[in-house]
Image 1 (tube, each protein chain N blue to C red):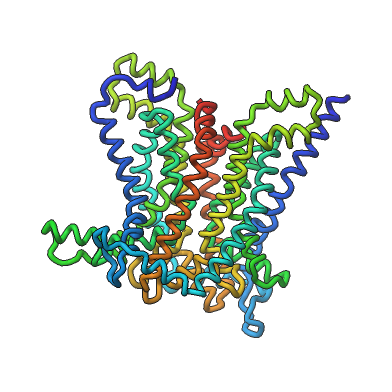
Image 2: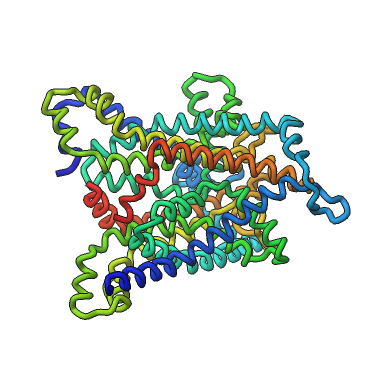
Length: 294
Length: 275
């Protein structure tokens, strides 16, 4: 039947169109991760300064030594704090974009929240040093207003600075999924609530919040995942000796303890995959993006 | 009718509170960079604001003597271009596949988007050991591969957005008038997608230019810009690094703003079609 033939040709076409990207993601994205996971069970070979196929769980045991577990937990903790703060800012911001602005202002705001993503994260983290430093603008203002007499020290090179830098950097990750969800809200629902005389806060808490909940959770997760992975905010803004998962991996690689570096990486990737799968099951996150191809 | 017109009556302070929080968010995002920009115009050695009449480009002029910086810049520009040249067509091709796929659609999209969430350090580490296994030594090629994996999801997304503004009826019209699928693609789809293809290219370029974690593992002998800058930021800070940061801020903000202004009609079209 000609219909089958057309469908078959079309399917072949889809395959060839999808092929280049699949090659990139499978060969250059997935296989390296699978290699790392496998090699995390091998052992260091002092003769070649590389690894040898002697299976061992030693690296996973070493994960729990020398405060490495603390670094893992601390990184996750700071990321969770960052994600919470970002979400608290992002819900109102996304509501302004999605519910309280006309098309022109909404477009402008989406642009303003998107721009920083494509600019240097390194420079933006570095800029906080000037703002928060002893001679920075915040300390200047505090002293001039008489609120502080000497520069406030904990503003910079502290967890506070790290979280602030991460919130500023990754806030857009929380806002964008919420804005996408707002676009799917049925107009009639908002209209009905207004028609029935619900005040703004009533409408917001009992109608808007439940409807955008998938976006809120997706936003929280996006920020969390990105904040777990980053290292530059901690390296530029964190206190002396502050570490994170990425810094720890780099340090372990520098002392050529390859299997341990691979083990840390494996644990983190598995943790992130499980997180994303659970969220996807719960919320059908991929549906958020399906509009794009509609 | 837009969603905002449904909100009638008073908001009991809701509008004000939410607008204030939005403003605070924008302040947190933009003020540090602007502050750095102003401080970099201070001709003295101290890192504080000066009154505008004393603004000077002293440190910007001093940049031109920094040859290591320029070598790193050249390397990064080259790798960024190479990445964008590859990511744009591959992203378009993936978007076309996704659009006409019927089965495996969400799995395909999940594979593409999940690449964004793999930590850069880990992806860079994995790629570097894999390339070591096949005896490829680090160079601009290895880093470009790493950056392709990083930027491709964004190129796919931007292409998908662009593709969603091309109405299927337009293509069907071309086909009815006798155009072959290829002809319809080249003469109808591609011109309509010009804006998003340019965005896809520029975004891939900028993402590569600013990437740091993968570069740490994949770079060849010549440092890229972020690696060079990171070194400069963590050693004794000379004011030239502020000038250079300022230049990076101005140029990258200008580039993205131009692209987004060009794409504004499309963004609006999506908001409308999503509603």
